Length: 357
Image 1 (tube, rainbow, N blue to C red):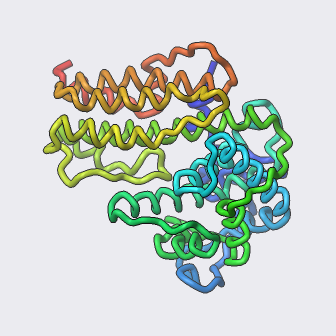
Image 2 (spheres, helix red, strand yellow):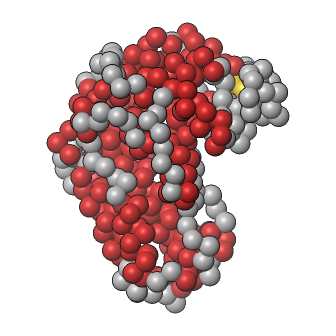
């Protein structure tokens, strides 16, 4: 049995019911068909105007064709999230979590052997950008001690312009300002509508909550390992980007110099970002495991021993997420070779060498 967690990371070839690649421009070349993606120079005013990176007009056409359904489903997801956490005014992380519910939706259908609706695929592509927006705003809050305003569609767009969210590594956002403002309004208005969703709502919420929790957990685990890489002088792995790839790296200039007491405090503050919101708090164990990981970083043990502790905790976390994605309450064991597929076998080799193994 291939774990669903592994499939989400390794499978990059899936298409929606209309035959569009769900990863769009991020799809590996070997899985693209001729004419799949049409690029054009961006005509919109602002930072994207005539930018060297093109915009994907194929994705834009699909969004336009399914706009009403996209907006209805986004409203439904926000209403589910806000009701579960009793949100009255969305914070940065509330917006991030709702974006992850939408990003998870194609996988929800896929793992239930259903065709991926075009509106779900289009919505997931749109909310990927919102996830990046929320992360950049969070960094601004954390690093600059900035206090965000009450969010409106207009200031969300202004922040997206300011923090570069509209310009990706290879493409620019393909939505015009009017489209973006309507989209943002669904995410930040104080009176979200119930929306429409043609799937069992509690199942969608449980699936999406575990998906979001996994992304935060993987991010924190990667930041933990980066401290350990610094401890053993492993510069090669430290040069890698963030994990997951749509996240960011935030750490002190010299992690190796940070004492255990400060490490545990830092990682406990990051663990606090994992807010359980699955029905019945089925994802609560992820938060507890993130605190276990933080405590392991404060034990003043050799890097190899700390990695071994983190690795074991990571395995349990993946098991929790796998059960959540499947809608199961069973305990799912995640062996070492699967954990290595998720983070790369070279990581274990580094710490085995450091321990003299």
